[in-house]
Image 1 (cartoon, rainbow, N blue to C red):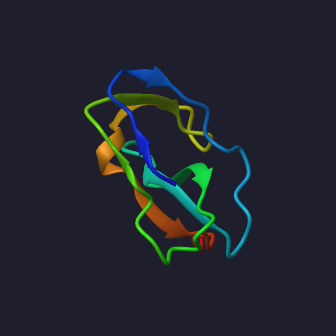
Image 2: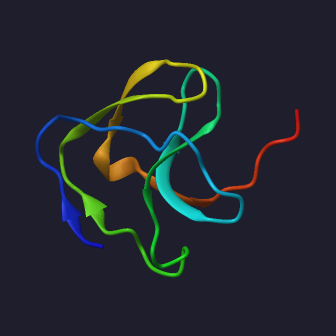
Length: 84
């Protein structure tokens, strides 16, 4: 997936992440939970290819914190729930 984001946009996070599935997203600045925005079809084997100067406005599905993330700083991760 190659995507250039050069404007600020509001995006929806996935409300449910599936155990073992790869995602593109970020770590919430308020609760430290991983927030998935897109499913990573490469399963972590290729760079996600998202770049640009744009910012993504996102609400964390775990704590509800509204935050802004730089598109070029998104990360790939495989979801495994944290032990509580």
